[in-house]
Image (cartoon, rainbow, N blue to C red; front, side, top):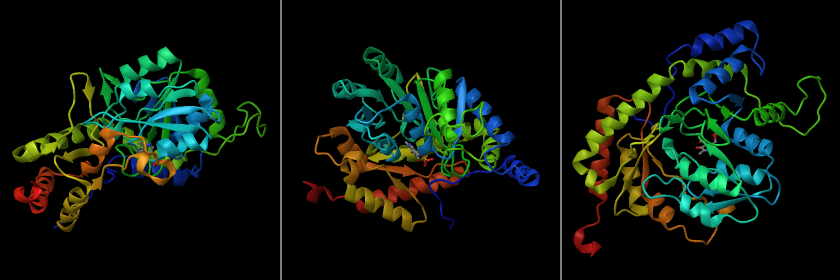
Length: 376
Ligand SMILES: Cc1ncc(COP(=O)(O)O)c(C=O)c1O
């Protein structure tokens, strides 16, 4: 039987044609028409005034923090459950990522925990829209306004997720996206910043291109970076953006298939959800096994792997990883992250694939169930 991968790119549109155009016309580096076209398409998609393409979603986060003016010794509040790039980018600026706990179910940053973590050194908040589900941006923006903080959305995983009809990427001071090969929209490696702030966008563009004065070639008023995207990456991205509506609706369909297939044993699971205000973009259909610990969760994943199904564990919280290890208690993160599994989520999946994943999960759960007598 075919192996079902947790994520796969789908390159079914004009990607090939546009890449060949780059090769045929010799525009293979970081000048060329596809970069501007991708930026314009992405800004329109998010509903933001500006989009600035970068070479990946880690450099875009770093660039945003430098452009915002983060300085050594500053503090930035981030959720402890995230991909490590969120924390690393704060460290790259010699600032301190201040870890806070997350909300049950979504594992997105808990606004109440943010409020408690604010100190005189706090400069900003980086909510992460984890696995494609939007963080509580109304509450986060309200806290930021009260304390004069920036809000940098880490939207690496959440292209197209919405809150009250507004797409992530248009809600904070700025936002950062990833176009890595496993993301909803990919350029192989790539990233994008969005913002409505004209000055901030200009600083991002300046710093992205080694800090070269846009009106005076080889004059560098500041220390910048080479974080530019290539025309070839952007060509793939433009082909992807032309299909983004289909991508998002296909992912919603896959999520509905999972709901149906998991329904017979859904009482043993916590499943993704939406509210009246929120729309998930389902980068990953993420489930939590109730009553499991990390040992059983990992055993379930091994069973599924043996059945030809790749899965991924939910990210380890930052506070258990060596560079950010802390003893402070993060009860929600500790209770939830070790029970979480990302199920395969990509546009190549058919309904039968989803049914096979669900059946394999069911059988792995029953094979690893702790007998009642022993559990007691
Ligand atoms: C939450 C989050 N932030 C940042 C990144 C970094 O993006 P990239 O891998 O494109 O550097 C990722 C990538 O997976 C991510 O999931």
